[in-house]
Structure formats: C-alpha cells, structure tokens
Amino acid sequence: MKVGVFSAKPYDRQFLQEVDAPDIDWHFIETRLSEQTLPLAKGMDAICAFVNDQLDTTTLSQLKKMGIMHIALRCAGFNNVDTQAAQRLGFSVSRVPAYSPEAVAEHTLALILTLNRKLHKAYNRIKEGNFSLDGLMGFNLHGKTVGIIGTGRIGAATCRIISGFGCKILCHDPSPNDEVKAMGARYVPIDELVSQADIISLHCPLTPETRHMINDARLSQMKPGVMLINTSRGAMVDTQAVIQHLKNGHIGYLGLDVYEMEGDLFFEDLSDQIIQDDVFQRLQTFPNVLITGHQGFFTREAMTHIAQTTADNLLASQQGDYSAPSFLVTPASS
Ligand code: NAI
Image (cartoon, rainbow, N blue to C red; front, side, top):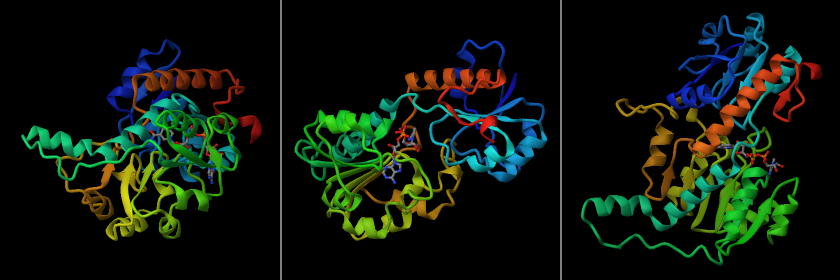
C-alpha cells in the first residue's frame, strides 16, 4: 500500500518508519497538501495528512479522480477536512483521536508556569549575567480560579494537573465530564467562567460554533490581568481583538501554541526570511505574550502512538474494516 505522507518532517519519517507495518510503503512529501500540490499524490493508494493540509471539496474531488479514497490524519483535530464532502464522495477518513492528552495538557501547564514566573525572561537574563529580579514577580497558582473551556480528553487531563496546584476549577462544555466533576470542578455558563477565572484555557475543537469564541465581547468580560491560554486551534481566538485587549492592558498574559494563520508559518524554519504576517509580528512585540509553534503534541510518547494508530488505520481501511473509533468518515456512511 503506497501512502503519500504530506507535510512530512524528519520526525514523521522516523516514527512512521519505526512502526512494524511491512505492507505500508511510505512516500514522504515535504510540501503541504493543497490544490496546487495534488499532483504529488499521483500513484498513491492513500494520503496521510497533518493539521495544515487542506482537504476541501476541490482537493477531495481531485483525489477521488486519482483513485485515492482513504485519508489518514496523523492528528486529533480535523477542522482542515470537509467531512461532509468526504462523506458525499465516499471517502474513508481516519484520525488519531487520543494519542496523548497529557502531552498537550502538560504543554498548557508549561505555558502557564513560564508566563507566570517569567522563565523565558529569567533564562535570558541569567545568560547575560543579569541577576536582578525586577519585573520577574509572579503569583501563586494555589487558590486561583482556572476556567477550562472544553473538558474532553485534553481539558480533563489539564484539570487533573491543575487540581494538584490547589486551584478552583470552573468548566464549560455542552457535554459535562463526570471525571472532571469528581475532581471538584464546577460546570458554569461560559459568561460566568470568563468573568470569574484568573486563568482561562481553551480545549475545544474548532467548529463554526467555536470559531472566534474568544472575541471582543468575551475579552471585555474577563478579569483585568487575566491569563488566556490557547493550545486548541488558533481560530478559537479573534487575534485582532486580543491584540486590542493586550494594548489596553486588560489581558495580563497570553500563551499560544496555535495561531489563526499558522498555516503560513508554523512547522517551517523561516529564520532567514522576512515574516509578512503583521498581525503575528505585532503579537510578538508584547512582553506578556508567549508563543510556541504548535508543539503541544510533540512528545516521544505521543509521536509513537500517532505513528502506530495511523498505520493501524491505513491497514484497517485497506481491509475495509472501519469499526475503530478512529474513523470519522466511512464509505458505508456515504
Ligand atoms: P475531545 O473531543 O476529547 O474534547 C473536546 C471537548 O470540547 C468535548 O468535550 C466537547 O463537548 C467540547 N466542546 C465542543 N464544543 C464546545 C463548546 N462550544 N464549548 C465548550 N466545549 C465544547 O478533544 P481533545 O482530544 O480534548 O482535543 C481538543 C482540541 O485540542 C482538538 O480538537 C484540537 O483542536 C486540539 N489539539 C491541539 C494539539 C496541539 O498540539 N496543540 C494536539 C491535539 C489536539
């Protein structure tokens, strides 16, 4: 089975090749999948895609013409796939639903702790022989109110860690999670959560309902000095609105692992280029903003799990077995 792995990085190569799957012939393609790069999929039996590969109606129709009917996402989120079109066209689409919620939850905590205790600044100061503590003061997490929006796998893992810090936890999710309730967390309407939390962390999928969930009105409701963390999908936050609230000092800290327009930036070494995205560059100018480039998932354990599940999904689709929960779209459902 020939599989075209789009957006392939050296680490994808390493972990996918380590999986014991002799029936899969991996073809690593460095470029992102889009209408323009589609010809690179010629001759493949299936496509393996990542978060910024575009699987819209046009791309899917073209893939179908090439006889490629299975897409294996090597990620959990699937907002880059038009699942309705995939279903209509008879595709099978799989993903890796729960490779390591702890990987993203632990990265969320890394952002919170780094922003709060200003470790990124302290690191540079000490390197330069500056041992002054001025401007490095943080706050105790103990006793603070943390708002978790989305309490699925990653949100629940974040609650587990946060509860160990002695924080009060407020949650919002249309499907409350009993495990989270058992930790003492309280489910509240979103307006109550955003107006009461000292730290707000987003863990929802990106859907038409959650796009720009954090907009000017919601930002205005937040406590002055609030810390906002987004490790879910960039477009959950209206970036222009958040910039205004950083400029007027209302938002105290912003930690991002994802960014609305990350498709043109993230996962590439652009260090010798002029970044053209002025919004992203403006974000970088704030001393209280910390950005990482979509690395929440990036642990050895998660990569091993992602590679294994992706290979299992591909082999299952080859055998016409779509019973695993990893399948988002199956030909039978078309
Ligand atoms: P999940 O499906 O287990 O949980 C998502 C939760 O969000 C569900 O409980 C759902 O009911 C809830 N939800 C849906 N709409 C909501 C709304 N309007 N308000 C509040 N809650 C809502 O997903 P999981 O595994 O926890 O992942 C969450 C998201 O994290 C993914 O969709 C993905 O976008 C992102 N992610 C980011 C990674 C990174 O490297 N930064 C890696 C993996 C996932």
